[in-house]
Length: 79
Image (cartoon, rainbow, N blue to C red; front, top):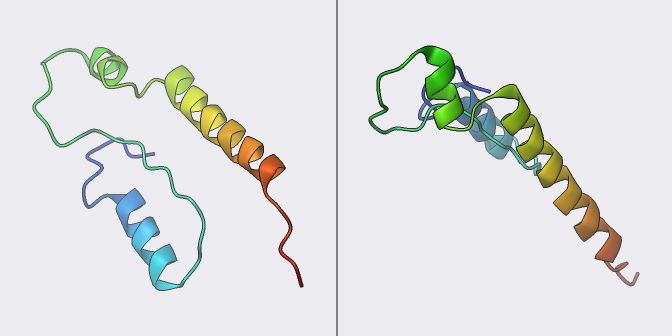
């Protein structure tokens, strides 16, 4: 999770390194979008863009639930 811009951040570097190493795992990047944000206190800005701990945890949980559902419907490959 970035506490700064998503573009060219640590998440982008990790995703690139995983891709270069041919490690096929999903990567979810959370960070500040490249757009003009209204001036406010940091907590208010983060809430406006969905980067509160509760919202991030919810998005991660939802992503895992979808993965779990998809895994349950996957069919075995014939040998």
